[in-house]
Length: 235
Image 1 (cartoon, rainbow, N blue to C red):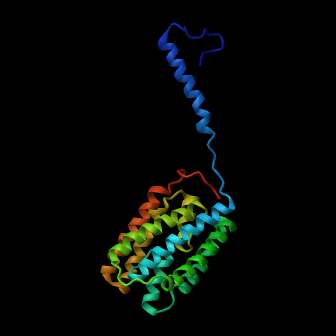
Image 2: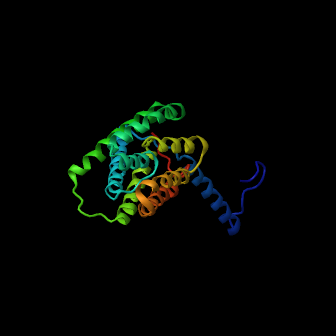
Image 3: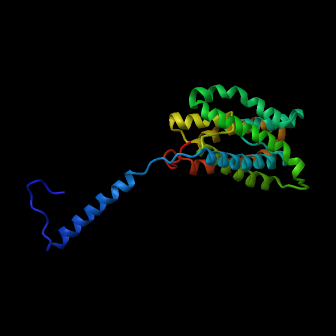
């Protein structure tokens, strides 16, 4: 841009004219970029996305359960305890999540808590219902770990982007990313390593290998796709 008392560019000077044109084009394009604002999700969009996310995660957990693998987070702790004690996974999963709601209320507010509570309740129902709906005669642990991990990762991605989680470790991870800017997938990967090491006492090292493979799959999905500032939708 020229000064107030300077002459404009010579129209016969093609270098100057093209430079000015490029400058003007850049100036005109800048507002288009700057005008991008976070798009707020509507309630129906939140309900739809959270339901789909929970359905994906719960089916992934069901595959892990059928292959006697351990998923990460509170769900992994609940699975390990159910294998060791014979207690119902859904009851354990719902109960173990209760103490974490205090952190969610203080760090993320009631909106997140309500969404997460609904997601946990729905997942508890779905995982308990799947055995009556699906009869799996044979299931390779490798398939369960890899495909189940992908489904869990995609489901958690949908939940996180719509302001929900699946309790426990997810609440902690979501809080750390929201308040500290830490990458959700990588933080959870470290926590998962501790949980899986403890679970080795229950399911053995062969089960741990495919459990780790599944954990790597869904944490990579979160690490690659759930970066701060990449998704502008808010709930």
